[in-house]
Each structure stands twice: as structure tokens, then as C-alpha cells.
Length: 298
Ligand code: NAP
Image (cartoon, helix red, strand yellow):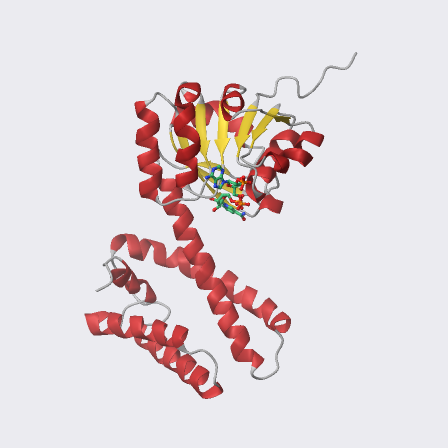
């Protein structure tokens, strides 16, 4: 008789079955983990139950079904509304919170968990639901290291190629999350503004996209080159000076104004560059902008 290859897969509980929670539970099921689920609106579990998940009657029975409990709901108010009434059931189990938050909220939740003997990991999901369970998914974890090590193989069901532990500081995964989202919006705003600019000459966004992607790839080299400059606070311009960037930004802003499209974004870039130049960085590389970003907004 053939033995079941999934017989030794540890059980896992997923609390919260929105778009993301459903994708997480489906990934655990796909990897053969006995998966218990719970959601405030139980009808969202229907498809998962058809695929083999167990829908718990109560949140408490969901928590006690597994040594690893994943929570993924809208925000941390909802997280606390859920976990506080079941804190004694959670004691000794590993709680992994994949709800998006600020680093302060993550650290406060970690303190709450530590006071109750709940090993806690805070995580950030750098993926959309259809990518969960594929090699494109990136999951960042910070907090209780031995809890991560104990459950790493189970957590890999969500992000097989990039299940990444950062550090003990529970706030770090949220900080990375915010930093990476900032990059995403910066790039997307640049692309969409460029598409609007080219649209005035009837160039389709689809025509622009391949060159936009080439530019985005080239920027990865700037990131690699500027990172040590940022760390060492030394901004030798081996490519272009701030003055050169400043002049090109003025062209972008003027072009946008002249063509009657949105110019606030390039004007904002230029305002920041003007400030860096006024602060003495005219001959420095673009990395000198970090000096502005490190200070609070005046
Ligand atoms: P969603 O589809 O809106 O689902 C929200 C979930 O939170 C539902 O399960 C909802 O329960 C539950 N919930 C909200 N308030 C609650 C409360 N007071 N008590 C109990 N349950 C409550 O959101 P989502 O896309 O799954 O996102 C969930 C988390 O993942 C968010 O923090 C989001 O930032 C993060 N995330 C999402 C994505 C993405 O692409 N979707 C990517 C990265 C990170 P009901 O079903 O009963 O309403």
C-alpha cells in the first residue's frame, strides 16, 4: 500500500478569509497541510471547505486546532478584536500576523503577545492573492526567531521561493513593507505620468511599456551603486550631478505644463532637487537626496 506523502504535514489555522486569507489557506491545502479556517462571515469558507479545509464553529476551536495560527484581516483593530478574547487558547501556539500595519502597531502587538507567552511573528505579504503559493510570492517575517525556524517549512507553502526571516525586531517586516510599497508607487506614478506625456503624441501606453521596463531595469543599477553612498553619507557623482538632474526635471515640468497634462509630480521632484542643491549638493550624485528624506518635513 502506498503511504500518503502529505501525512506528516503539520496542521495550520487561517483566521480571516478575505481575498488574501483565502489565497493563504488555499496554498496550505495545496501543499497537503491539514487546514482549519475561520472567518467572521463563514460563507467565504465554502470553496476552501470543498477543497478539504475544516471550517471551525468558533474562533477558539480554530485556534486550538493547530500549533500555527495565521491571522490576515483588514487592520490591527480587527486583529485585536479577534485575538484578545482567545488569548488563553493562543498561549504556547505560534501566532503569525500577516495583516498590513505600521511598525509601531507590530511592536505593540508583539509586546501584548510576549506578556501572554504567545510566540509571535509579524509578517508582510509582498504579493497579490493570485501569486500566493507561487515562486513570485515574497513574504517577510520578523520577530520570534525560533518560532519562524519551527514553522518555516509550513510557511513556505505561501512563498516557496522567498520565505524570508529578517530580524527579531517585530516592526521590521512592516518597515520593509512600507519602504517597498513606496518604491512601487514611485515607479507606477512615473510610468503613468510618462504614459500621459506620450499620450499627447498619440503613443499608446502599450507601446511605451517595453521601454519603460528597460528604464526600470536600469534603475536597479543606480540602486546598487547609491546604496553604499547612502550608508557612508558620501555622494561622489560618477554618473550625473544634482545640477544635471535639476535641469532635466525643469524640462519635464515645463513639457508637462506646455502640453497641458499634470505637472505637480515633476514640479515636486524639482522642488526637492532645488532644496538639495541649496543645501550644497549641486555637484553631488542623486544619492545626496537622502539628506532631505532623513529629516522630518518642515
Ligand atoms: P479583504 O478581502 O477586504 O478581507 C478582509 C478580511 O478581514 C475579511 O476576512 C473580513 O471578514 C476581515 N475583517 C475585517 N474586519 C473584521 C473584524 N472587525 N472582525 C473580524 N474580521 C474582520 O482584504 P484582503 O485583501 O484579504 O487583505 C487582508 C490583509 O492582507 C490586509 O491587511 C491587506 O493590507 C493585506 N494584504 C493584501 C494584499 C492584497 O493584494 N489583497 C496584498 C498584501 C497584503 P469578513 O469577510 O467577515 O468581512
